[in-house]
Each structure stands twice: as C-alpha cells, then as structure tokens.
Image 1 (spheres, one colour):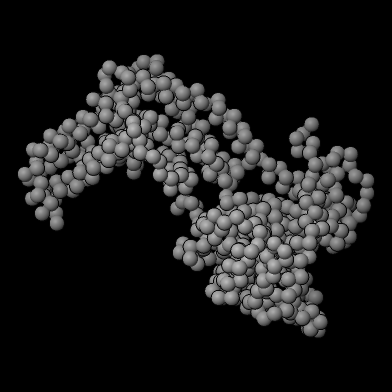
Image 2 (cartoon, one colour):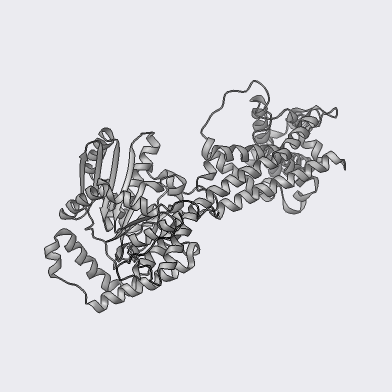
Length: 592
C-alpha cells in the first residue's frame, strides 16, 4: 500500500482542534479591544500563566502608501540586534526582507516605554506569551513574536511563544520563511484566514493598478474595526469596483498557484501554519506552496458544501472531511485540485525528512571509503620516508593503494556535492546544516580529504594556470562546510591539547605552505626592495601562524615529519632569514 495513502489525513483534525481551544476566542476578544482603542495601540493582559499581547489593526498604512508593498532588508544592525538569528548565513543567500511600513510601525511600538515595561513584566510572570492581531495588526504581532523569539534565544530564557493572526497581510520574502524554518519557529505562528478575505491575499498582486480603490476600502475596514455600527453606515466602493478588486487579486493568485514553488522567489512568501476557516469547519496547512494554492481555490468558491458518502480509505476519508470543512462542495470543479493540494502539502512536508533518512543510509555505505583513507594516512605517517600524509599523496606513484585512495576521494566528493544540492534545492530539512550529525560528518570529511585535494591541485600544476588553491582552486563545498561548522561550533573553545591532533584543524594549511614556498623562491630571485619587503611580510606572517598551530598541537603529526613540505620549507626559511637578517631593516624602512 502507498505510504501516503496508508496514514490518516490530519489537516482537518488539527484545524478543528485549534478552533475548539480558548486561544482563538480569547485572542479575537483582545483584537477587538485593541481595535477599539487609538491607532497603533496595543493591549496587554494576563490570564493565569498565559500573557496576551494584542495589536490594533487600525494603523496609518494603506495600499496607496508606496512602502505598503515594498520589501526592505532586515537591517544588519537592527533594534539592539534582536533579529540576529534571522540574518542570512552567507553572502550567497538573499537577505531577509520584510514589509517596510509595518516594520517601522513595530519600531515605533518597540520604542514605547510602556510597551517595554509591560513586556518585561510578562516575561517574568508568564509561562507562555501569545501575540495576536487582526489585519495589519496581525503582521505587527508576527514581527513582535520574531523579536521576542530572538530575544529569548539570546538570553536562553524558557518562555513559550505563540503568534495568532486573523486576516493579516503577508510579512516578508522567501529568505524570511527559510530563516524561520531554520530556527524551527514555523510552528509558533498560526494565521487564521477566512474564505473570501482579501487582506491575506492582497500582497500577492501588484498594488499600483488598484491603489486608488484599496485606500478607501482600508479606511472602511478601519472604521468598521473601531466601531462596527458606524462602519456599516459608509460603504466606500460600489459592488462593481469590489468585484474588480476581487478578480484582479484572483488572477494573480491563479498564476502563483500554477507556478508552485517557482513563484515565490523575490516575492512575499507565507510562513507558519495557516488555518483556513469556513462556516463548516477549519483546515490547517503549513506548506507555503499549498497555502498559496488553497488561498486561490477558496477565493474561487461561492457555494456551501455538500455531504456524501466517505471513501473507505482512512486517508481519503480524511481529505474528504477536510474539503467539507473548507466549504468546498464535493461536485465542484475545484474539489479535485483542492484535494490534490492537501495531499501535496502532506507529501512535501514529509519528503525532506525522508530524504534526510535516505542520506543517513548512504552515509553509512560510503563510510568504508573514508575508513580506507584514514588507514592510508596512518600508513603514510608511519612510513620510513618520513614525508607524511600530504606529501606521500602528492608524490604518489602508480600503486594500487594510491589509486584506490584517489578513487575514494572522488566518491566522497560526489556524495557531499549531492548533499549540498539537495539542501540548496529545499529537499532537506531547513535546519539540516545545524544538525550535529551532519555538521560533524562534513567537518571530519573536510579535515581528512581536503589535504588530498590540495596535494592533487599542486601535483598537477593547476596553480600555475589558475592561481593558488585558496583563492582559485578551493571547492565550494569546503567553504559551505566552513560556515556550517562556524555557525554551530565556532564559539566553542576546546581544551589545550597534550598531543598532536589526529587531523590538522586548519584544512588549508598545506595550501598556505605551498604559497609560502612560492614566495620564498620569488624572494630569492628579486632585487626590488619594495617587493622584498612585501614577500618577507607575508612569509613572516605564515611562519608565526604555523608556529602557533604547531605549538598548540592543532596540526597532525605529518606536518612535523622530517621530510614534509612544511619541515623542508621551515629549514629553508630559517637559513634564508639568517642570511638576510642584516638587510631586512632596510627593506622595511623603504616600505614604511
């Protein structure tokens, strides 16, 4: 039996469960209270051990505001650094961007002394804090939740955070969504969306064509949220214009829904859990592409649901119940696409974890290749020629043992390149690069194999045609593994070593040795005082760094082998240094 159809469909059960808790009704009550107060206000209330913070949906933000749809980068130096966990992990990633006008709105609230005092009190007295808001107040609540999550992360405080929004517009781009998933914060956001609400769908479409109509519509909503009886007295737009807005947004949603995952790059992207509500029930969806498609499908609906016999399969029955909870009639044309959407959402949610499990199996299968290279290193380090691991591979012959190690090097490279491709194409969990198992495995691979890659690079003379290894030959995977290791273990300080490391901890050490050898040769052949000073400056820098690594025993025993490239270079360096010592002050005086 298909694994996808053999299990229960839970989106309807989860949606119904959330709707039955007092969290939604209590949050909605406080949203009404915040809306009844002045614009840009907030309400703080504590119920038992739960603290609620509700933000007003009546804020001076409208569709005619140029910044309403504009995404702005989350500043690197933001409000006291509180959004630090969300910043991009490398220069290759698109920066995290959020809705500019609402970010400024939150900054104004954050700078309010009353807000800071009340939040500090809640953190001290609450086990859980729930942020909530209606319309643009919901987006403000999302920013506030991200602020508190980042703050708690930096202070190691154990307070549960949940954000519940009602009909709120989108907040940020794909990088924001990925950062939230990376931090495992997706489950802390619950966005409630009704069948025909335009506000959560509005930012999927360009604002310029409908901006003149959006402004009075938002003003009407503001009046209605503040005082429903007064709001009903003024109908700002005709039914014809409302229909035009509806169809305009629907058309853009259709394009995004059909494009799927490819549509979200560079645009607003949903994050967290979305609860789609109708008069018949609710369904919970957490996959971004499925959220967009469901927003489109529900907007096309206009009739109540029908009931019928449920399929025998528990999974198919669950999907059928989910459709009925959304108010989608079983005979409607959109019923099929909606059913496919729910199935795809579940499948996409499971696929990254399944891929990760399959990778673990493949990792166990390639471990023998790594073990053979470890054996080869031990053999080289014990060899009578006293050249060590790096130089033995660099000067290898045509033996079967050497050929097997070189083949294993290529097999391991293919495996790890595939890991990176899967991760960057979103086929692995978003926090994959933080999982200790994979960070440690990639780091060990880098420490063991990169010296062989460097040896091969200089053995084949690639440095003469392309340039030295570090700038021109280093594989991208090693730079990625560097960032993974730095992010998870960069702040950890190990104990002082009593013996040499099993593997040299600075994997580009041998590339530095090769560059230092090249500079030493260049120094012997030049008479330009300025160039001599530059060469000596670089050579001395490396000599000091290498000496520190050796003294701290951060290198493998092969580095200090009698006939290793480093030992031979060090002898040449010390000899040349003693010969040129009387002249070196002249070089540095000239340079200065």
